[in-house]
Amino acid sequence: MMMANYSIYLHIPFCHHRCSYCDFNTYAGQEQRIPAYVEALCREINLAAQSSPNPLAIHTIFFGGGTPSLLPPEQLDKILTALRQGFTFQQDMEITLEANPGTLAPGYLETLHELGFNRLSLGMQSANPEDLALLERQHQYFEVIQSVKWARQAGFNNVNLDLIFGIPHQTMERWQATLGLALGLNPEHLSLYALTLEHGTPFQRWTERGLIPLADDDLAADMYEWASERLDTAGYCQYEISNWARRKTDGDIYACLHNLQYWRNQPYLGFGAGAHGSAAGYRTADVLGIQAYIAHCAGGSGKPFPTTPATITSTPIDRRTEMQETMMVGLRLTEEGVSARRFKQRFGESLAEVFGNEIAYLVGLGLLEWAGEDNETLRLTRRGRLLGNQVFMQFVGD
Ligand code: SF4
Image (cartoon, rainbow, N blue to C red; front, side, top):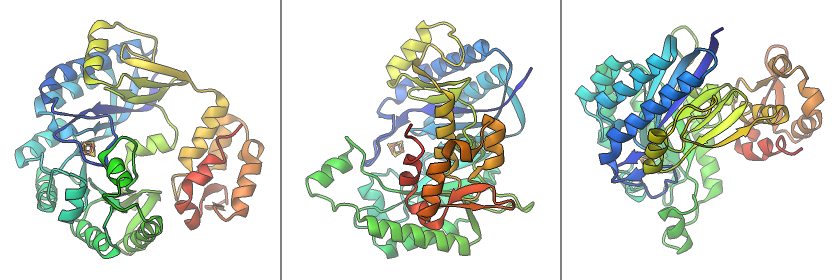
Protein backbone atom coordinates (compact mmCIF):
# COMPACT_ATOMS: atom_id res chain seq x y z
CA MET A 1 0.00 0.00 0.00
CA MET A 2 1.31 3.44 -0.93
CA MET A 3 0.87 6.14 1.71
CA ALA A 4 0.01 9.33 -0.10
CA ASN A 5 0.85 12.94 0.08
CA TYR A 6 3.67 13.46 2.48
CA SER A 7 5.70 16.66 2.50
CA ILE A 8 9.38 17.02 3.29
CA TYR A 9 11.13 19.92 4.99
CA LEU A 10 14.93 20.20 4.80
CA HIS A 11 16.71 22.60 7.13
CA ILE A 12 19.86 24.31 5.84
CA PRO A 13 21.34 26.08 8.89
CA PHE A 14 23.98 28.27 7.23
CA CYS A 15 24.00 32.07 6.86
CA HIS A 16 26.76 34.47 5.89
CA HIS A 17 25.79 36.73 8.76
CA ARG A 18 23.17 36.60 11.49
CA CYS A 19 20.44 39.21 11.04
CA SER A 20 19.77 41.32 14.13
CA TYR A 21 16.20 40.05 14.69
CA CYS A 22 16.74 36.37 13.84
CA ASP A 23 16.27 33.51 16.29
CA PHE A 24 16.17 30.70 13.73
CA ASN A 25 18.45 27.71 14.09
CA THR A 26 21.21 29.00 11.86
CA TYR A 27 24.94 29.62 12.12
CA ALA A 28 27.27 32.15 10.51
CA GLY A 29 30.81 31.31 9.41
CA GLN A 30 30.26 27.54 9.23
CA GLU A 31 30.12 27.22 5.45
CA GLN A 32 33.15 24.91 5.41
CA ARG A 33 30.91 22.29 7.01
CA ILE A 34 28.42 22.27 4.10
CA PRO A 35 29.77 19.09 2.38
CA ALA A 36 29.75 17.05 5.61
CA TYR A 37 26.32 18.42 6.49
CA VAL A 38 24.86 17.43 3.13
CA GLU A 39 26.34 13.95 3.52
CA ALA A 40 24.66 13.66 6.92
CA LEU A 41 21.38 14.95 5.51
CA CYS A 42 21.45 12.34 2.74
CA ARG A 43 22.14 9.64 5.32
CA GLU A 44 19.20 10.79 7.43
CA ILE A 45 16.95 10.75 4.36
CA ASN A 46 18.09 7.21 3.42
CA LEU A 47 17.55 5.86 6.93
CA ALA A 48 14.08 7.41 7.22
CA ALA A 49 13.06 6.03 3.82
CA GLN A 50 14.31 2.56 4.74
CA SER A 51 12.48 2.54 8.07
CA SER A 52 9.15 3.59 6.58
CA PRO A 53 6.72 0.64 6.66
CA ASN A 54 5.31 1.59 3.25
CA PRO A 55 6.77 3.43 0.29
CA LEU A 56 6.01 7.08 0.90
CA ALA A 57 4.71 9.33 -1.85
CA ILE A 58 5.65 12.98 -1.49
CA HIS A 59 4.21 16.01 -3.20
CA THR A 60 6.13 18.97 -1.75
CA ILE A 61 9.73 19.60 -0.73
CA PHE A 62 10.82 22.78 1.02
CA PHE A 63 14.45 23.78 1.52
CA GLY A 64 14.33 26.31 4.37
CA GLY A 65 16.88 27.90 6.61
CA GLY A 66 19.11 29.55 7.21
CA THR A 67 20.08 30.31 3.67
CA PRO A 68 19.60 27.27 1.42
CA SER A 69 20.89 29.29 -1.54
CA LEU A 70 24.38 29.05 0.01
CA LEU A 71 24.44 25.40 -1.11
CA PRO A 72 26.16 24.85 -4.45
CA PRO A 73 24.01 23.10 -7.10
CA GLU A 74 25.99 19.82 -6.72
CA GLN A 75 25.00 19.64 -3.05
CA LEU A 76 21.35 20.40 -3.78
CA ASP A 77 21.44 17.74 -6.49
CA LYS A 78 22.80 15.16 -4.01
CA ILE A 79 19.92 15.86 -1.62
CA LEU A 80 17.30 15.63 -4.37
CA THR A 81 18.85 12.39 -5.59
CA ALA A 82 18.66 10.90 -2.08
CA LEU A 83 15.02 11.96 -1.88
CA ARG A 84 14.21 10.44 -5.29
CA GLN A 85 15.86 7.17 -4.25
CA GLY A 86 13.97 7.01 -0.97
CA PHE A 87 10.54 8.31 -1.88
CA THR A 88 8.07 8.36 -4.76
CA PHE A 89 7.76 11.80 -6.29
CA GLN A 90 4.21 12.56 -7.31
CA GLN A 91 3.39 14.39 -10.50
CA ASP A 92 3.38 18.19 -10.25
CA MET A 93 5.77 18.26 -7.32
CA GLU A 94 6.27 21.63 -5.66
CA ILE A 95 9.96 22.07 -4.83
CA THR A 96 10.78 25.34 -3.06
CA LEU A 97 14.11 26.91 -2.24
CA GLU A 98 14.36 29.79 0.22
CA ALA A 99 16.98 32.21 -1.00
CA ASN A 100 18.53 35.48 0.02
CA PRO A 101 18.91 38.17 -2.64
CA GLY A 102 22.61 38.77 -3.01
CA THR A 103 23.42 35.05 -2.95
CA LEU A 104 21.96 34.38 -6.40
CA ALA A 105 23.35 34.53 -9.94
CA PRO A 106 21.69 33.85 -13.32
CA GLY A 107 23.57 30.59 -13.99
CA TYR A 108 22.86 29.31 -10.47
CA LEU A 109 19.12 29.87 -10.91
CA GLU A 110 19.12 28.17 -14.31
CA THR A 111 20.79 25.11 -12.78
CA LEU A 112 18.29 25.06 -9.91
CA HIS A 113 15.42 25.10 -12.36
CA GLU A 114 17.00 22.26 -14.34
CA LEU A 115 17.35 20.27 -11.10
CA GLY A 116 13.59 20.51 -10.58
CA PHE A 117 13.16 23.50 -8.30
CA ASN A 118 10.01 25.31 -9.37
CA ARG A 119 9.28 27.75 -6.52
CA LEU A 120 11.63 30.42 -5.21
CA SER A 121 11.03 32.23 -1.93
CA LEU A 122 13.08 35.41 -1.58
CA GLY A 123 13.81 37.15 1.72
CA MET A 124 13.23 40.71 0.47
CA GLN A 125 12.02 42.05 3.87
CA SER A 126 12.08 45.73 2.87
CA ALA A 127 12.91 48.02 -0.04
CA ASN A 128 14.23 50.71 2.26
CA PRO A 129 18.01 50.93 2.91
CA GLU A 130 17.55 52.11 6.52
CA ASP A 131 15.20 49.20 7.31
CA LEU A 132 17.61 46.72 5.70
CA ALA A 133 20.56 48.17 7.64
CA LEU A 134 18.75 47.99 10.99
CA LEU A 135 17.70 44.39 10.29
CA GLU A 136 21.35 43.70 9.33
CA ARG A 137 20.25 42.16 6.08
CA GLN A 138 23.15 41.44 3.76
CA HIS A 139 21.49 42.61 0.58
CA GLN A 140 20.20 45.80 -0.99
CA TYR A 141 16.91 46.37 -2.74
CA PHE A 142 18.42 46.39 -6.24
CA GLU A 143 19.54 42.81 -5.66
CA VAL A 144 15.90 41.81 -5.16
CA ILE A 145 15.08 43.33 -8.55
CA GLN A 146 17.98 41.42 -10.13
CA SER A 147 17.07 38.16 -8.39
CA VAL A 148 13.47 38.28 -9.60
CA LYS A 149 14.60 39.12 -13.15
CA TRP A 150 17.10 36.25 -13.22
CA ALA A 151 14.55 33.87 -11.69
CA ARG A 152 12.07 34.71 -14.46
CA GLN A 153 14.76 34.24 -17.11
CA ALA A 154 15.65 30.85 -15.60
CA GLY A 155 12.00 29.75 -15.90
CA PHE A 156 10.63 30.26 -12.37
CA ASN A 157 6.96 31.18 -12.62
CA ASN A 158 6.24 30.87 -8.91
CA VAL A 159 8.13 33.44 -6.85
CA ASN A 160 7.41 34.50 -3.27
CA LEU A 161 8.65 37.65 -1.58
CA ASP A 162 8.87 37.79 2.24
CA LEU A 163 8.30 41.24 3.74
CA ILE A 164 8.52 42.49 7.33
CA PHE A 165 6.46 45.31 8.80
CA GLY A 166 6.52 46.99 12.22
CA ILE A 167 10.28 47.66 11.98
CA PRO A 168 11.54 50.34 14.43
CA HIS A 169 11.49 53.81 12.79
CA GLN A 170 9.46 52.42 9.87
CA THR A 171 6.63 54.82 9.10
CA MET A 172 3.39 53.93 7.37
CA GLU A 173 4.64 55.72 4.24
CA ARG A 174 7.82 53.68 4.22
CA TRP A 175 5.87 50.45 4.54
CA GLN A 176 3.52 51.53 1.78
CA ALA A 177 6.51 52.25 -0.47
CA THR A 178 8.02 48.81 0.26
CA LEU A 179 4.80 46.99 -0.54
CA GLY A 180 4.31 49.09 -3.68
CA LEU A 181 7.81 48.22 -4.91
CA ALA A 182 7.27 44.53 -4.10
CA LEU A 183 4.06 44.57 -6.13
CA GLY A 184 5.98 46.18 -8.99
CA LEU A 185 7.98 42.94 -9.21
CA ASN A 186 4.74 41.04 -9.82
CA PRO A 187 5.38 38.07 -7.48
CA GLU A 188 2.93 35.18 -7.50
CA HIS A 189 3.00 35.07 -3.71
CA LEU A 190 3.66 37.44 -0.79
CA SER A 191 4.29 36.63 2.88
CA LEU A 192 3.95 39.56 5.29
CA TYR A 193 5.27 39.19 8.82
CA ALA A 194 5.13 41.57 11.77
CA LEU A 195 8.56 41.96 13.34
CA THR A 196 8.67 40.24 16.71
CA LEU A 197 11.26 40.69 19.44
CA GLU A 198 12.84 37.29 19.96
CA HIS A 199 14.71 36.35 23.08
CA GLY A 200 18.51 36.50 22.81
CA THR A 201 18.63 38.54 19.62
CA PRO A 202 20.55 41.84 19.26
CA PHE A 203 17.17 43.47 18.60
CA GLN A 204 15.89 42.47 21.99
CA ARG A 205 19.05 43.75 23.72
CA TRP A 206 18.98 47.05 21.80
CA THR A 207 15.34 47.54 22.73
CA GLU A 208 15.98 46.79 26.40
CA ARG A 209 18.78 49.35 26.46
CA GLY A 210 16.56 51.94 24.82
CA LEU A 211 18.72 52.09 21.69
CA ILE A 212 15.80 51.41 19.38
CA PRO A 213 12.14 52.25 20.03
CA LEU A 214 9.64 49.68 21.21
CA ALA A 215 7.34 48.28 18.57
CA ASP A 216 4.16 50.31 18.08
CA ASP A 217 1.50 47.58 18.00
CA ASP A 218 -1.24 49.93 16.83
CA LEU A 219 0.85 51.12 13.92
CA ALA A 220 1.74 47.52 13.02
CA ALA A 221 -1.98 46.61 13.04
CA ASP A 222 -2.72 49.60 10.77
CA MET A 223 0.08 48.48 8.42
CA TYR A 224 -1.42 45.00 8.26
CA GLU A 225 -4.91 46.30 7.54
CA TRP A 226 -3.65 48.72 4.92
CA ALA A 227 -1.67 45.91 3.24
CA SER A 228 -4.74 43.62 3.23
CA GLU A 229 -6.75 46.23 1.37
CA ARG A 230 -3.91 47.15 -1.01
CA LEU A 231 -3.29 43.51 -1.91
CA ASP A 232 -6.97 42.87 -2.41
CA THR A 233 -7.11 45.81 -4.84
CA ALA A 234 -4.03 44.45 -6.62
CA GLY A 235 -5.82 41.12 -7.21
CA TYR A 236 -4.10 39.01 -4.56
CA CYS A 237 -6.17 36.55 -2.51
CA GLN A 238 -5.43 36.27 1.16
CA TYR A 239 -5.55 32.59 2.07
CA GLU A 240 -3.69 32.59 5.39
CA ILE A 241 -3.12 35.16 8.14
CA SER A 242 0.27 36.17 6.70
CA ASN A 243 0.02 34.91 3.11
CA TRP A 244 -1.40 36.16 -0.18
CA ALA A 245 -1.33 34.64 -3.67
CA ARG A 246 -2.23 35.70 -7.18
CA ARG A 247 -4.77 33.83 -9.26
CA LYS A 248 -3.64 31.37 -11.91
CA THR A 249 -5.35 31.34 -15.31
CA ASP A 250 -7.41 28.29 -14.25
CA GLY A 251 -8.85 30.25 -11.32
CA ASP A 252 -6.80 28.43 -8.67
CA ILE A 253 -4.28 30.46 -6.66
CA TYR A 254 -0.50 30.20 -6.25
CA ALA A 255 -0.81 29.04 -2.65
CA CYS A 256 2.29 27.45 -1.09
CA LEU A 257 1.31 23.77 -1.18
CA HIS A 258 4.02 22.89 1.32
CA ASN A 259 2.73 25.27 3.95
CA LEU A 260 -0.85 24.19 3.24
CA GLN A 261 0.27 20.73 4.36
CA TYR A 262 1.10 22.19 7.81
CA TRP A 263 -2.07 24.24 8.04
CA ARG A 264 -4.21 21.23 7.11
CA ASN A 265 -2.36 19.24 9.76
CA GLN A 266 -1.21 16.66 7.23
CA PRO A 267 1.98 14.58 7.63
CA TYR A 268 5.47 15.82 6.91
CA LEU A 269 9.01 14.68 7.61
CA GLY A 270 11.68 17.15 8.71
CA PHE A 271 15.35 16.48 7.99
CA GLY A 272 18.38 18.52 9.09
CA ALA A 273 19.57 20.26 12.26
CA GLY A 274 16.60 21.37 14.37
CA ALA A 275 14.04 20.21 11.79
CA HIS A 276 10.60 19.18 13.03
CA GLY A 277 8.35 16.47 11.64
CA SER A 278 4.82 15.22 12.22
CA ALA A 279 4.06 11.73 10.95
CA ALA A 280 2.65 8.35 11.93
CA GLY A 281 1.26 9.70 15.20
CA TYR A 282 4.48 11.37 16.40
CA ARG A 283 5.99 14.83 16.47
CA THR A 284 9.75 14.72 16.06
CA ALA A 285 12.61 17.19 16.40
CA ASP A 286 16.22 16.79 15.31
CA VAL A 287 19.30 17.81 17.27
CA LEU A 288 20.06 21.54 16.85
CA GLY A 289 23.80 22.03 16.26
CA ILE A 290 25.56 21.40 12.95
CA GLN A 291 28.39 19.34 14.44
CA ALA A 292 26.03 17.37 16.68
CA TYR A 293 23.76 16.68 13.71
CA ILE A 294 26.66 15.42 11.59
CA ALA A 295 27.87 13.20 14.46
CA HIS A 296 24.38 11.76 15.17
CA CYS A 297 23.82 10.86 11.52
CA ALA A 298 27.31 9.42 10.99
CA GLY A 299 27.22 7.22 14.08
CA GLY A 300 23.62 6.08 14.02
CA SER A 301 21.68 3.33 12.34
CA GLY A 302 18.00 2.90 11.46
CA LYS A 303 15.35 3.74 14.10
CA PRO A 304 11.62 3.07 14.15
CA PHE A 305 9.78 5.34 11.70
CA PRO A 306 9.41 8.35 11.79
CA THR A 307 12.54 8.78 13.97
CA THR A 308 16.16 8.74 12.79
CA PRO A 309 19.54 8.85 14.58
CA ALA A 310 19.28 12.67 14.53
CA THR A 311 15.95 12.72 16.39
CA ILE A 312 16.24 14.08 19.93
CA THR A 313 12.56 14.26 20.81
CA SER A 314 9.69 12.12 19.64
CA THR A 315 6.30 12.87 21.17
CA PRO A 316 3.18 10.79 20.56
CA ILE A 317 0.22 12.86 19.36
CA ASP A 318 -2.96 11.65 21.03
CA ARG A 319 -6.36 12.12 19.44
CA ARG A 320 -7.33 15.12 21.53
CA THR A 321 -4.04 16.86 20.71
CA GLU A 322 -4.47 16.13 17.02
CA MET A 323 -7.95 17.68 17.12
CA GLN A 324 -6.66 20.75 18.97
CA GLU A 325 -3.79 21.17 16.53
CA THR A 326 -6.13 20.78 13.58
CA MET A 327 -8.11 23.77 14.91
CA MET A 328 -5.04 25.88 15.71
CA VAL A 329 -3.42 25.50 12.33
CA GLY A 330 -6.61 25.21 10.25
CA LEU A 331 -8.04 28.49 11.51
CA ARG A 332 -4.96 30.25 10.14
CA LEU A 333 -6.45 29.58 6.71
CA THR A 334 -8.54 32.70 6.30
CA GLU A 335 -10.72 31.40 3.42
CA GLU A 336 -10.59 27.62 3.78
CA GLY A 337 -10.82 27.61 7.60
CA VAL A 338 -11.83 24.32 9.23
CA SER A 339 -14.53 22.34 7.45
CA ALA A 340 -17.04 20.74 9.84
CA ARG A 341 -17.59 17.95 7.31
CA ARG A 342 -13.89 17.12 6.94
CA PHE A 343 -13.37 17.30 10.70
CA LYS A 344 -16.12 14.71 11.21
CA GLN A 345 -14.66 12.49 8.46
CA ARG A 346 -11.23 12.64 10.04
CA PHE A 347 -12.12 12.19 13.70
CA GLY A 348 -15.55 10.55 13.69
CA GLU A 349 -16.87 13.26 16.01
CA SER A 350 -18.40 16.56 15.05
CA LEU A 351 -16.91 19.99 15.71
CA ALA A 352 -19.97 20.80 17.83
CA GLU A 353 -19.42 17.73 20.02
CA VAL A 354 -15.74 18.42 20.57
CA PHE A 355 -15.44 22.22 20.60
CA GLY A 356 -19.06 23.45 20.81
CA ASN A 357 -18.45 25.74 23.78
CA GLU A 358 -15.26 27.29 22.45
CA ILE A 359 -16.80 27.94 19.05
CA ALA A 360 -19.99 29.49 20.49
CA TYR A 361 -17.88 31.77 22.69
CA LEU A 362 -15.63 32.94 19.83
CA VAL A 363 -18.52 33.39 17.40
CA GLY A 364 -20.24 35.45 20.11
CA LEU A 365 -17.15 37.68 20.37
CA GLY A 366 -17.20 38.21 16.61
CA LEU A 367 -13.80 36.52 16.14
CA LEU A 368 -15.03 33.37 14.32
CA GLU A 369 -17.81 32.93 11.78
CA TRP A 370 -19.54 30.16 9.84
CA ALA A 371 -19.13 30.63 6.09
CA GLY A 372 -18.97 28.79 2.78
CA GLU A 373 -21.66 27.24 0.63
CA ASP A 374 -23.29 25.07 3.30
CA ASN A 375 -22.23 27.33 6.14
CA GLU A 376 -20.03 24.50 7.30
CA THR A 377 -16.69 26.33 7.19
CA LEU A 378 -15.47 27.78 10.46
CA ARG A 379 -13.05 30.65 9.95
CA LEU A 380 -11.69 33.86 11.42
CA THR A 381 -13.59 37.10 10.90
CA ARG A 382 -11.60 40.12 9.70
CA ARG A 383 -11.26 41.24 13.30
CA GLY A 384 -10.29 37.71 14.31
CA ARG A 385 -7.33 37.82 11.92
CA LEU A 386 -5.73 40.50 14.08
CA LEU A 387 -6.35 38.49 17.26
CA GLY A 388 -5.51 35.05 15.90
CA ASN A 389 -3.40 33.93 18.86
CA GLN A 390 -6.19 34.67 21.32
CA VAL A 391 -8.55 32.57 19.19
CA PHE A 392 -6.15 29.65 18.89
CA MET A 393 -5.48 29.59 22.62
CA GLN A 394 -9.16 28.77 23.27
CA PHE A 395 -8.66 25.37 21.64
CA VAL A 396 -5.63 24.20 23.56
CA GLY A 397 -7.07 23.88 27.09
CA ASP A 398 -8.37 20.50 28.25
S1 SF4 B 1 19.09 35.26 6.50
FE1 SF4 B 1 17.21 34.51 7.53
S2 SF4 B 1 17.89 32.71 8.70
FE2 SF4 B 1 19.74 33.83 8.11
S3 SF4 B 1 20.20 35.13 9.87
FE3 SF4 B 1 18.93 36.36 8.44
S4 SF4 B 1 16.81 36.05 9.10
FE4 SF4 B 1 18.06 34.45 10.08
